[in-house]
Length: 88
Image (cartoon, rainbow, N blue to C red; front, side, top):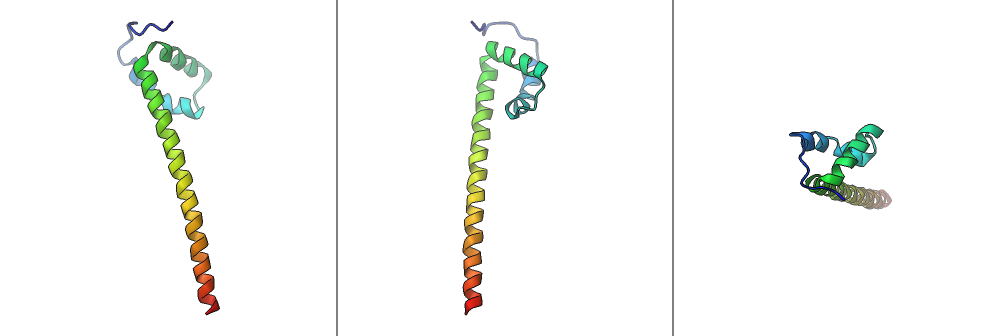
């Protein structure tokens, strides 16, 4: 069972926080992943921050997908308008 009262080295959370994005993207080495995962078991604050980063990443992906969809729709409408003008 995780021990949230465990004494942590000062600055340890900050150092691991810098690696969380790499962790989520799968760009973190095995040793660092293990260290981060072990830390997350004992640190509810870092688990919460990682959860927030996951939600933010998902939101960014959704926004990007919407942007791509809108861009595609805009291009199709523009192309149709230009073709109509050529027909005139």
